[in-house]
Image (tube, rainbow, N blue to C red; front, side):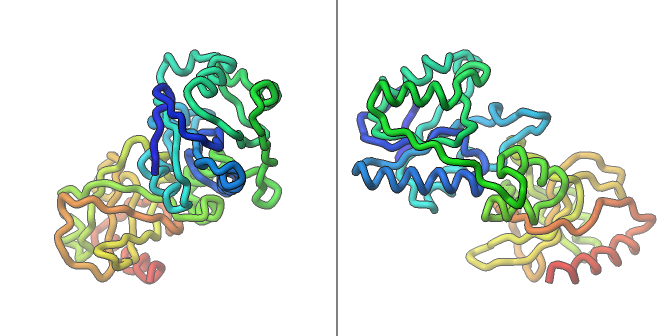
Length: 297
């Protein structure tokens, strides 16, 4: 994967897909396939524009990113995308006008064609629309392909929709739109080790604060350790039985015994099991965990 800095540019011939590509959902996959097809036509590199930081994704009250920049790059590599153009969304970048953004693109890169969605916006305050992009491409002899929206049932597939589903605990539907399971990656750290005393030792994972939040609750998940997949029960959020309000991931890895402290693992979320509730005793908690265990096996 070749990574181009937006401000440093490159002379490499590219076909460029414009957007944020936070999720890489069904709609994005359509843009990527069109970009790759056009790149083959022009004998150029297919290229995706994206941001390295997450602040641009905080809108409509929905914070965080579905994929960090590093996760995005890995997924794009799996899709055989050859290159990305990245920028950091700073105050300076946010004030760049739509016309200036396009001027920087054409000055810094050798663009043969551009692909975007019909609702693509760019520049200060999202002032730039597809109509302006069409004028720019016509003027500079750049082919432009504007793809129609992709729908899931009667609802348009979007990053906003995916984040709302995650926040509502509906990871199952969110994963259908993403075509892969929502994931959270982090280092396993020592906590109070209460789970071990209960017979359910958990891997406590530090959450990347950039990630889009889930509904607090208990989830069916899985992890892959040394190439082997293990089903898991994952508590995302507070631990009311112990009057602890801090949010973290506690994952019981079914069938695994070993030391994961200090190691990085990725937890893949596949379904919502139940709400977090306060139990009157540890005995009740153990009984519930045994019920949860039946649901993940």
